[in-house]
Amino acid sequence: MRIPTLLVIEDARDQAMLVGVAARRAHPGLDVRIANDGLEGVAYFGRIPPFESRDSYPTPDLVILDLYMPELDGFEVLEWLQERLNPIPFPVVVLTSSMKPDDRDRALALGATRVVKKPTDLD
Image (cartoon, rainbow, N blue to C red; front, side):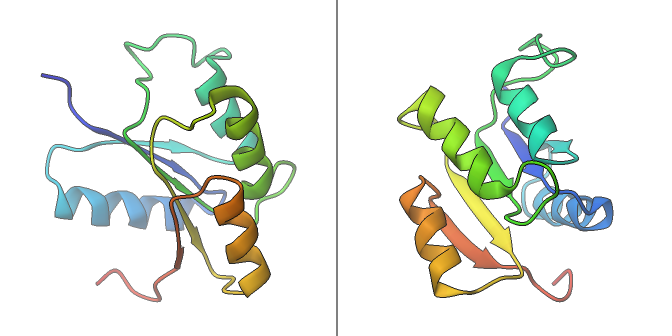
């Protein structure tokens, strides 16, 4: 049986680590992978080196995606997924500090499953 995989795409390393800790706390044994920005996330999805091996880098069962990142933001990651993997084969939850209605609506229109405000603490 394959271990479920969570891919966190977040440029703030401390926030990515907190998401991983919280996810493992809720689901012990979960395989948590971290992409440090949108470019790395797209490389992971596209099997671009060093992410070409699906044994080492399995297709995620869930993606948690930050919206505002340098170079390639969460909107652009969602666009990339829609263009290449439509329909997107896994849920994408946007975790963002922005709760602007336009950001929420745009993320959902681009295929996000849900948009959630970043919590202020681990609990």
